[in-house]
Length: 255
Image: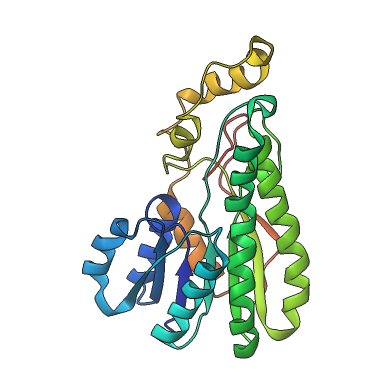
């Protein structure tokens, strides 16, 4: 049966793979991105199955508008995938509070904003799935990723608690924790990496050097993860957390 999906961060990476997989199965999708030009190809290919919405997940009004786009365009919202986010490699001491807060606003409060907007719709329907894309970094801390881990651990706790609240009226929630995937997440996360203080070379510096050869060669395939997510959207029961993929030591970061 065709469902209505809303996928945040659909312009590239895992979000794009999820949107395409859902559309290929005949589902209707609201695909979102801050730059909607990234979605032009999907719009041309899938026509009436697709709605495009500009979305900065840190903006509560835009979050509500994206959910409304699903309801107004397709009559309901069955599956919300909170995928939008980014990483930022640097020692905590060297990360300005404004940048720390910015990452938390996107990776944690973005999830909160979309979930808050979607639950009333799903409650009235007495049905829905909310799938939060967390990370193995939401289960294990890595040097240079304090803000990212704080956000993703927050996503896990938030999801586990709210899942218990909404289960009685048929809404299923889970935090998915994938490892490294070929989404260009790592290169973007380390793009602005500047020379770090010598004291952090043996921790943050060592991990960055170790991972440099991994980016672009991660074991995780976004298309395979997207296929799993499609199956989860039909599940009657979901665990509060679900690890996806293989996580070799030191290489288990995701986007």
